[in-house]
Amino acid sequence: MRNNQDGQLRFSPGLALAAMLVLAFLVLFLVVPVGSVFYSAFVNADGSFTFGHFGAFFHQTLLKDSFFNSLYVALASTFWASIIAVPLAYLTIRFRFRGALIIQTLGVLPLIMPPFVGAVALQLIFGRSGSLNLLLDEWLGVTLPIMDGLNGIIFVESLHYFPFILLNLTVALRNIDGAMEEAAVNLGAKGWRLFRRVIFPLGLPGYVAGASLVFVKVFDDLGTPLVLGVTNMLAPQAYLRITQVGLDDPLGYVISVIMIGFSILALWLSAKALKGKDYSTLQKGGGSLQQRELTGLQTILAYAWILLVLLLVLSPHIGVLLLSLATVWSYAPLPDGYTLEHYATIFQDSPGMIGNTLLYCGLAAGIDVILGTAIAYLMLRTRLPGRQWLDWIASAALAVPGIVLAIGFMRTFRGIEIPGTGTALTGTWILIMIAYSVRRLPYALRSCVAALQQINLSLEEAAASVGAGRYSTIRRVVIPLMAGGMLAGFVTSFITAAVELSATIMLVTRDSDAPMSYGIYLYMQSASGRGPGAALGVLAVVAVAVGTYASHLIVERASARQRPARGLAPVNANMP
Image 1 (tube, rainbow, N blue to C red):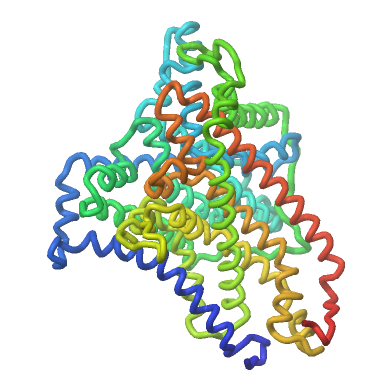
Image 2: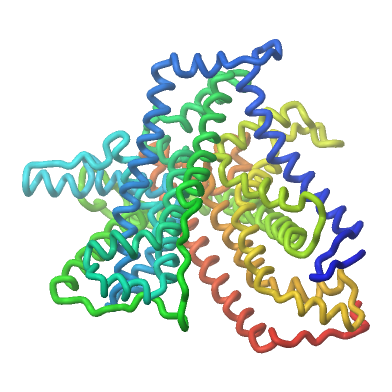
């Protein structure tokens, strides 16, 4: 094992082996399955290369319409999510008023509920026979087509994913140098012109990052269209083609390739839009945009907007809670009565789903943290050739829709049996857990990379100077200091995997292997099952919320313990 002048490892057999194991996992469970999907889209039954399957796709009216519908829904959802998020981000950073904490809470709240669960609740509230339209029809004689067809999907997706823009744009606006605003004001810019010409352009990197994520998430979503009964979109068509026609249907793979292509295109365009432009500012003493007091009219408008958004954001959660307690809720603004029977039903009939969720998501998150820590260390602390490829391949999972990965798994591992059992691998829960791990790896990886970047290399050098070996230093110094970031990565992977449906719906072959997300989907397919489904959804939300809150507490305590000692690295020369 040799170090170069900046303390990074040039070669180590152990680290080379770790890199090979990580690469093997990524190739086996990401590159090969996705590659098999691409291969199937471009070959005939005899193995010859062809573009004919894509021609057949665009000659079928249903599939062509599905493509444009998915593109329209993704773009429209991004637009409306921006309409919600941009004013909230600007209000939080620009003005001083009570309620800023509420907006910060809004930034996380919608993400802890699966969008397909919220879709059912929003139907009951904003649907044609929902609470709002029943009241409007009674009072004014009008109804609003909020939840009709594609409009309903756009409404649900916008409310669910706007926090991606809100959180990224808020951070970007907070980092703007206040001196640039003062200079613009001195030159006569103010009000809308100041925001349009100076503030928003400087915050554009945060907005573009959030908007591209919204587009990708909406374009790939399967659960929401299925729950709302809309099948003329790409993700539902891919699911229907594979499940009804079979794994040998080339059009299912063509749809999958198109979905991956547009996801990659969206991420590439977001990077291209910012390339060659300088958004950096000079922070003088940490001075950011100065917060100003709201005038009387501005206060009324600000609180009216916050109240409107708060009502919209809370409506899915309120609707699911009411539905989980309702005896009957149909053609009425509120349920006819309330009961706890639905909760008793799921505890009696579906305890295995809760246990399966904890098992699959816990194992997947654990794998993600191990892989994320290994990739981060290999990338930032070694000079191993090609180490950057590990980051690129792992991050590429962000652009792979869950349904596409599941299709790739089904094709790649079809016919493979678990040694000694005679059981087909595609008929077990193992692939469900691995799919969760691959899909959520980018989240854990970013947390681990950020945590390692904050650890000064001198701490490891100090350990080495008193005789500690490389692996003792990793175990006794690096891992404890990364613990907060690793935990954050674990929780992020866990809670996002807990609401995964796209891959789950394809890979579950037995009800006994089903997790909560699949159970909720099954319950929601019938009117009689929506009460238990909502109860299961409430439990999922509570579990995610408790896990998120607990992780924040643990991270804060770990940071508090480490902060006083970060400048010192007490290491025993005889470290085991």
